[in-house]
Image (cartoon, rainbow, N blue to C red; front, side):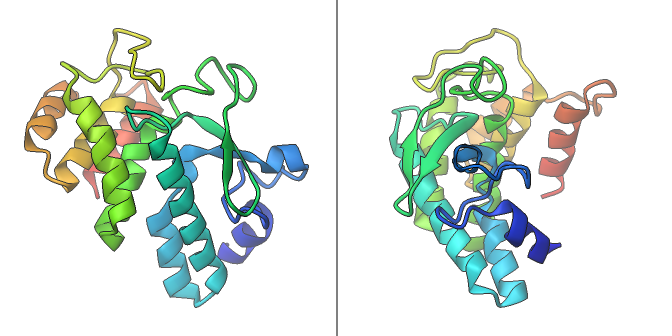
Length: 210
């Protein structure tokens, strides 16, 4: 499976994950789903396979994380970003260029980023991941509650809450000991696993199992 992923789903110029094996044109190859920057997994793949390609994917992912984190004071990542070149040049997509109105916002894809960063930090304890994660948690720590979807400048798009946004922040806060944020987000999580929202329920379960 790892051989197939490397062959079909890794951009051989940027060495970042593609959105799928269907991404064969240069334009499609440039599309990055930011929640796919799973550096901790990539490092684990490198250790398991002894294949240096995964080490390169992990390093390039960290370059992308650092650049994404620096783009806005909030530290939030967009759902999707255009990435070109070996040096990881970033440029924004507009709404509906990829999937939805949230393409250049912290939406239902990027809400997984705090979980991905925290997961990586548990594995590697590296400063790039920690700094990016702390920047996001500092932003969330200033909010009275975590709501669904934010612009990259930090404006809440909706007033409602959603577990898909709360659970990853709760896990991240627990990982690097943001105690007050952990307690605040824990109060927002449902007492029982949601039965009619698989995405939210899945994120609550997988973050709870970490």
